[in-house]
Every structure is written in structure tokens, then in C-alpha cells.
Length: 423
Ligand SMILES: *[C@@H]1O[C@H](CO)[C@@H](O)[C@H](O)[C@H]1NC(C)=O
Ligand SMILES: *[C@@H]1O[C@H](CO)[C@@H](O)[C@H](O)[C@H]1NC(C)=O
Ligand SMILES: *[C@@H]1O[C@H](CO)[C@@H](O)[C@H](O)[C@H]1NC(C)=O
Ligand SMILES: *[C@@H]1O[C@H](CO)[C@@H](O)[C@H](O)[C@H]1NC(C)=O
Image (cartoon, rainbow, N blue to C red; front, side):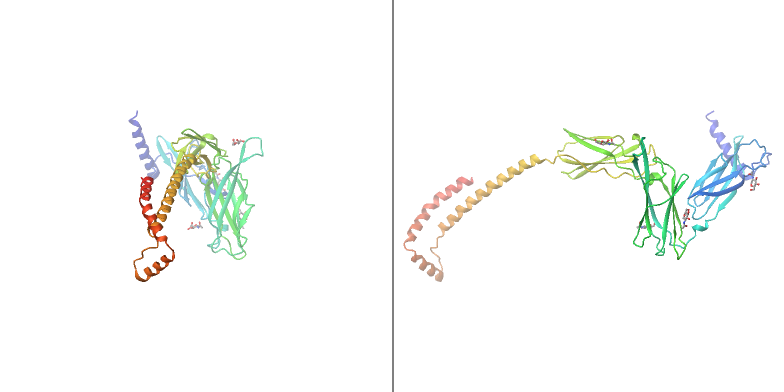
């Protein structure tokens, strides 16, 4: 049985190629669908529709359809329905093909293709360089306290830059579509020429856990020229600005640093978040960043220091395609910066310095004193100056003997005291 499977697969593959390309002369022929139409049903959204060929025999066949999108972006999928919604940018038009397929007797039969095309709509024409550029949008979730039940409200903010060739009187208008609802912006921000350059929707129809594409359309008007509209699709997970975690607390007990927080304001439940904890050791000046999926992180610290703690969140891939990290929570400080040991050392050093200075001062005093005693204005050995000194000297009557006596007396004991105090 197990060995049979690849054989069947090969057979199926081979006959599929045979059926599609060579159409072997069999009584059963699969006919292409009829009345294939493409209709614009909203911003950046089209509906493809077709019918089973009325000449298909026998009528009891229940075929599938293979849809191929040719433009603007190639895509291809299979469906049992006779209609299909497609979300895509329609600037450059849209074209698609469809064929009937049927798995019969382990072989895949396929009809020929039918195609349809949507020309670029006339309002998508406009002067080049007049459409907006660099459109960015972000969503954010807020708790809605209006209702008793816990509910969430998603806001949307978009910004853009004016086209480089847009006339000064250009005015832009922004619309978004999510699901079946389309809304026009009511709160614009303007540049110095009063042209709209950003938009804010405090409330939108986007659900807090939305997964569909967000379509944004910005068109414009000017008296001087036609303004080229601009469409862009956004994946919600990629533009959702998650809120930071709430109520971050940190506590040090011995060598355990315990950090706890609550999940951010979000429609996603608790198990849907990844967290990143940043611990900054202020004394050593280094960061430690850790990842976790629970609402607590315990770190063993061997360092008495002050720490700065921040936590951020992201919706994990368990619940949605991975997106952006939130902002960091506000910094939280714990621990102390080793005040006591520092002051202790400082005092010791200070006292040592003071002792040393005192010692030096006393030493200097003694040396100064000794200096004056050792070199009294006595025997200057040079001619003119010597005479001068001698003259002055002799004016101080009888002091020379006493001076000399003092010197000889002082000499010995000074060196003794010096030796005592230094060593
Ligand atoms: C296809 O369209 C034509 C004309 O619009 C209509 O008469 C016919 O009934 C449609 N065929 C099917 C199978 O719906
Ligand atoms: C706007 O987008 C263009 C191309 O996409 C890029 O080169 C340019 O740096 C962007 N300008 C700003 C201000 O982001
Ligand atoms: C802009 O687009 C909206 C929605 O498609 C449309 O209703 C409106 O008439 C357009 N405005 C201009 C000036 O093209
Ligand atoms: C955060 O803490 C405050 C005070 O402790 C509390 O009132 C509040 O409910 C907490 N927030 C959440 C989301 O639990």
C-alpha cells in the first residue's frame, strides 16, 4: 500500500499533463466557464464571477475552478465557488483567467482558459508627480470604556508627502476600506500651504484582532491639473503599534531581581504576547536584554547597584503574523548605587590625605624655620653685595654672635625630630 502511493502520484501527474495539453479523444470533455466578469466592489477590491458552461455534459459533474491573476501581481489558486474576491491595487488595471478542472479517475482534467481584463479606471489617470508619496499608516488599540463589556477601539493614523509636481492649490483626500466599510478622513493635518499631509481616525471599523488587508486611497483635486490618485494595501500586523506592557513592577530580594507586568491594552488575550525585558546596570553601565512569553522575569544579580528596568511587548506568532515591538515601558528604577561602601572609602582616603597634608605642612614649617636659621643674612661671599650685607649687618648691633650660637644649638635636635617623625 505504502509503495503504491508514489506510483499513483506519478500516474496522476503524467495524465494531468496529457489531459491538459493533448486532449486525448475521450467522450468526456471539460468545457471552460462562461460569462467571466471582473467588477470593482470597493477600494482596491474586485469580485470575479463566472458560470459553469451550460453545454457541459453530463450536468452532474461537480468541477472546481483554477483562477490565475495575471496583473498587477501574479497569483493562482483553486476554488469550488463560481465567484472570488480579490484585494489588490487597481492603479494599473487588473486581469485574470479561469479554467474548469476536475479530478476524474485519478487524473486531473482541465479546460481551456477564459480571460477578462479591467482597464485602469479613468480617475486613476492624472499628471505624473502629482500623487502623494511615502504613505505610512499605523494602527493602535485603545480600551473602550463606553461599553460594559471589555471592548477595544482601533485608531488609524496616516502620513504622506505632497507629490513633487503637485500645484500649490492641490488638496488631498484620504479614504480607507476595511472589509466592506469605507470611510473618509475627517481630521487632517496640513502643511504651510494648507495641503493635507496626515490624517487621524480616532475610531475605525478595524477589529482589534483584524487579519484582512487595510486598503488606503488618497486622491486629490487642483484647478490646474488632474491629481493622480494613490492606493496602498497594508497588512495590519505590520503596521499595528502595540501598546507597552502595563504596571511594570520590580523588586530586589537578596540576589533575586523579580520583574512583573501586565499585558498591554489589546484585544489579544494574555497568551498572545512576547516580551522583552531590558535591565540596565547603572553603576557598570551595561544592558542585559531578555525575552520571555510570560508576565514575569527573575534575574539573579550579584552586583549591588541601581537598575533601570523597561519592558516591551509584541503580538506573538502564535496569534498573528509577527509585527512590531511596542515602545519600551517607562523606566523603573530599583536597587541602590552602593552609597555606603563608597562613603566609607572616601572618608578613609580623605583622612589619609588630611594627615599627609598636615605632616607636610609641619615639615615645611620646620624646614622654613631651619632655612632662615641656617642661612641668616651673614656671609654673602661676593664683593659689592657682600659689602652691602656687611654694612647692614653691622647696623644690627651685636646680633651676629647670638645668631651663630642659635644655629649650632638648633642643628642637631632638628634632624633628630625629623627622623623621629618621618620614620
Ligand atoms: C451569460 O450572460 C448572458 C448575457 O449576459 C446571459 O444571457 C446568459 O444567461 C448568461 N449565462 C449564464 C450561464 O448565466
Ligand atoms: C520617500 O520614498 C522614496 C522612495 O520610496 C525614498 O527614496 C525617500 O527617501 C523617501 N523620503 C522620505 C522623507 O522618507
Ligand atoms: C476620491 O475618491 C473617493 C472614493 O473613491 C471618491 O468618492 C471621490 O469622488 C474622489 N475624489 C476626487 C477628487 O477624485
Ligand atoms: C495597574 O495598577 C493599578 C494600581 O495598582 C490598578 O488600579 C490597575 O488596575 C492596574 N492595571 C491593570 C491593567 O490591571
